[in-house]
Image (cartoon, rainbow, N blue to C red):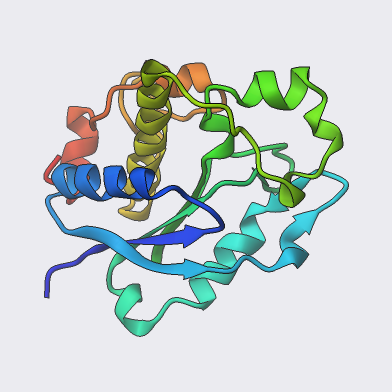
Amino acid sequence: MEEKINILVLNDISRSILRYLQKNLTSIFSRPAAVSKHVIVPTSFYKMEKDRYDGRKLLNFLTENLTLKEVKDINLAIFDRDLFTGNLDYVFCLATPFPRISVISTIRLHPHFEKDYFQKGLKKRKIGKFPLLVRRLTNNEKNLYYERILKESVHSIGHTMGLMHCSNARCIMAPSSLLEHIDKKELEFCLPCKRASSSPG
């Protein structure tokens, strides 16, 4: 049976984002991508002192709760809250190649995140307690936001397929610690990464 890309929805992800991911991931990886299930994230993963969720605990939780059928597929979890792991104050995504599962955080990919969260004093309110970023996006902002989510999704799926970070800043597998890094990347694998992967590219 053909491997699928299962999209796991954590918290509140808009249907338009999910449709966008389904369509584009199916095209990029030449395999069906579809929403698999909605997952409730344990509140114990939220760390008040960091105002973020523990990404490693979340990834382990998702891994432990995969069904036997899902273990055979590629699994991508989409979360709209902030993540940290170890000494890293925040991360855009985490992934593991066996079983093939990754989680991306969409919150910092939002064009309004820094302005709304930092400049307006919202950091005094808990990320896990209120809806963020409710202002309407312009068409250009929406396109940028969706493209960032897709890029991080493809990047994290690449990790589940065994790909490491790439030194080519334009490759989708280049590491990203800033939004500028994500925006600079192309939405495709460089030739060496294509060769190292089972992805049809």
